[in-house]
Length: 499
Ligand SMILES: Cc1ncc(COP(=O)(O)O)c(C=O)c1O
Image 1 (cartoon, rainbow, N blue to C red):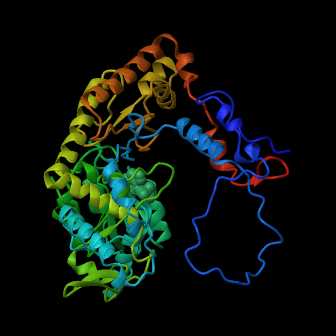
Image 2: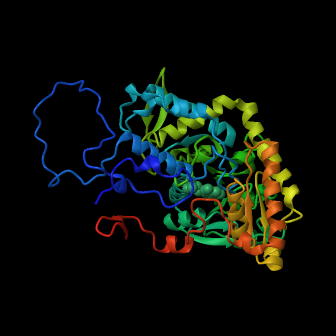
Image 3: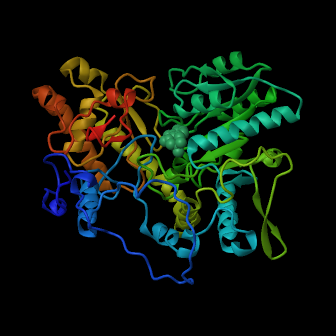
């Protein structure tokens, strides 16, 4: 039996029992929609019957619908609520001017297949964003089609493959450091290559001797992020690129950490040939929950012919689409995730060159300051000066008190701060990967440090309390492993629950 509508507005805002579903709130005859008046002639169109009747959707009034989703939103943590130092993910505050730009109906309603002569403005956006991105990365041209970082990785690897094929070669191995983000080996496998893992040395950087040993004729390329996932700048990067180029391998830059070097250093100058950047991290677009994103891929001159297409090109005072000569084909609609690109361009234009450089400077300054504040309580296994993030270890804390990295992360939530990334990268025991980001103030950085120090202090006197945290959030400790192994993705009408 559906329960009457109206309950949504009577439930508590935060905490308490589970939020009713829209189906629980459904009441026959209630509706939350209205269509605009018809602006075309009414006609008799025969619509073929696709289903025996209307779908059994919940019937809910707008009031209840808004209350329901607003309450759900309040039960979640968000970049607009507070500090979100989730290492590697760059969960920073995104200026609202970027959303303003993306809300323009002419851009919002763009159809992926609209002819170029009706979308000159959108093509200008792509061209301008590409020009800035290429200036920042030191590359020649870029595609905005890949809709995420991982999709950019796959695109870059397919470009590598096309390059080698064009030279009559078929090398089968990609080198990846052991600190790499999980998407790197996954993309390599998806692209049909095998992975050869490179160990990190005592500095937390790629072991140069191991690289020299691993490089042979079967190496198609090296995939690397710099700063790496330990937050450290790979000091030997120029030499590494030289070694890989010597066997005609290509060097791929995972640009997910680009915010650390914006306007200061360029992957192209370090010797990289292919760069993907995560617009949803480095440039504005909040990306929690899996999207939307954009992972544009930029390449050096000799790889432009392999880029996915079509690409916008200038033709007199107009712009049109053109397929690169030896393109790998399409990887998405022509404009990619266009509104994410638009947000990125608005961000680049709002900040300008000096502003983008300040992004890098502040992201590094914030991370170094925070690291220095917490390093007495949390060991820093690789103590070289960090860039935009650092990896601390709760291994000693665990030995002394039983409190683990996961407990520290959960306890931070009680203090109004989002958890850092935990247990990644895998090369650090009880890893806490902290990225305060460039948008947090001095006071917030100090508040994060105070919270981390307070948790370490509490672990020493009352470890069970920390191990049971969080105590003040609507959901405490979901079973992550069970959720990952047996995800419940569908609603079972009969049983009133998922299966
Ligand atoms: C270093 C690194 N590489 C790749 C990715 C993958 O990006 P996406 O999540 O957009 O697929 C991420 C994501 O956070 C990352 O941190």
